[in-house]
Image (cartoon, rainbow, N blue to C red):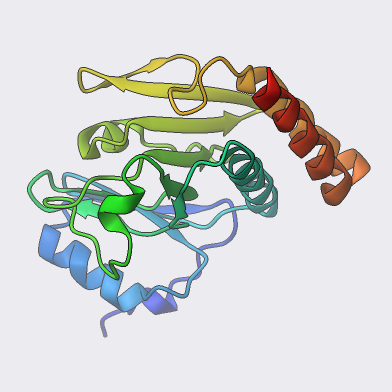
Length: 213
């Protein structure tokens, strides 16, 4: 009897690694898993990973997303968040579901579209990865051409900028001259101690002051 992927019980923090998965099989697995699920996938030239995030992962993801949204709102930059949308490119045989992602510079190019094709459409301008279970796959983001990748791991924020097809650690290209690597981990920790609303209000005030200087 064949086992359906929907029957697989991937516990939080665990992952399943499948090898020699063809693109057609990958597409079939995505369809079978469906969109309403907690698990995340990564596909890299025949190797498929299915991972279920920990609660700590989800908390950090939401707070980091909130900080990015505050930055974009206060700096009056139009954007479109697409959450954990599956981004894939058949020609490159790669696919990924970020913890969250944003179209910013390319927001107008995909505005109103219900489906995206990375062989035609641009990739998101910014992707977020919360690396609690060693899931981050920067090589896939590099191949898909995502200009900026933020990785939050062990209380530290690492900002990667795509240059000549490879990521280098740098300050943000979207928010230049802002000390985000220092400030965001500090305020994320404050969320867990002082509460989300109080911290976000303080962070919003900080960004407004930045905007005035």
